Length: 259
Image (tube, rainbow, N blue to C red):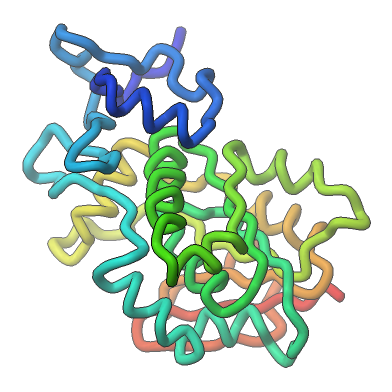
């Protein structure tokens, strides 16, 4: 039996035109097109065209506002301008001074990967969920039209698929210097502090229950190190302990040396 469909696409000419521009494979959207009739009961959110961008709109108010990817404005644009102060950049760069190749194997909405590209790294973004990958591709497409952000976008490449499989396909001679992971785990407590954005992610996308296996694959494929983002007080992933950690106010970065 097929799993319940948790999202659908509101069919429209502008949306289809943008999907053509993004050159995403049509197979990503099989069985998700919605036109006219009411969405299935299992559907939690709708991927739709709105004001010259693609957004994912939750159907329930308690799941928050529509989600879109915007690298030009707001917090992401500001952080990209001051990337040298970002802890993620320090964790990924380590003591390296030469340009690094990085794989963000849990790209999500691409915020961390975009910061790394702003810092000068060549970044491959891997995202397995079709709806989230579409939001990310749309955000990159729009950012690339901006003269200031176009050089950053030129250092970013999106691959859609399961990271474990994509990492396994990398030839030994093309191993990235660093692999970055930010897996999403189940919340231990249901609190009002959980961001609504994360709630719709959990309902539509689900948790990363293969994080341990993904870490092991990353350790085999990274040339220099693997960096894992975790909540500040959370346990490490799996049984292997990191070589060192960078700890901030709410999160930390576990660094595993592989080279």
